[in-house]
Image (tube, rainbow, N blue to C red; front, side, top):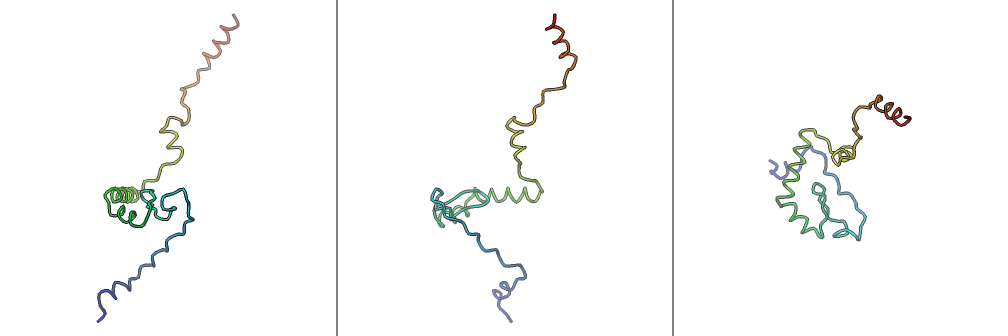
Length: 109
């Protein structure tokens, strides 16, 4: 009979993706090698990254992202950001044509 570890290793799930290659950037901590995607943070070394992965802020962030993914909500767009900042489409109210004509009549008198 095969051992439990052999059974676990024979799973039908696809292989895990290989980590993507990143160009080294001298301006980032750790030259950009150690990055937490859910938190969007760079770390100086692998030890700092593993400590971060075990911490509460990272776990809260991943839970929040999982909740949003489960609900089907979409990320914000540039239009959403502009509207929140008050820079969206202008709302000057309805156009009053009669008042524009009155202003021209008053200017001619």
